[in-house]
Length: 184
Image (cartoon, rainbow, N blue to C red):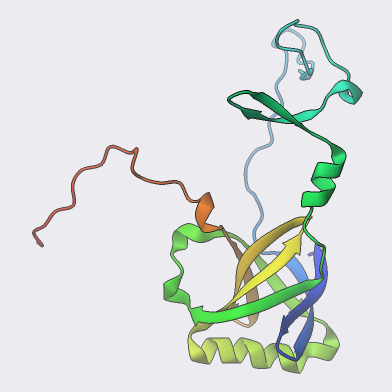
């Protein structure tokens, strides 16, 4: 395996240097679209919806659609909104794992300690295991700030990205049967 991030777990005065590895691998087929006649690969073009003409990449801007039209975003807007890159997985709280609904779980990663941090890593892993708690953390990965939990799994600490509450859709628009009031 190849690490995708290096940094450290941090809480209080404790700093544990670690490497981050993806804990899962996709097992889907990567299929291409081909022309039935000669099996040539089909390519997508950027086409102006109103004119039907292809648009060069350098002539494309990004915008956010609103009722009154589009708000065009400049490169400076993206830079201003960019998460500050840190190399720290900051533990902000410890909670019982059961307090976090599985709906929030997103992506697991393995954390491997640097050789100099083996003892501190083991202490944190074992303390999480014996307490039944997980560490709630913030961190930045690929310019995106995220929430995650740290939890022991076998002999490794897993960093599991979790979604923010506003990312979970409401169920109010679903047509669902009523909850039964009688127990069977």
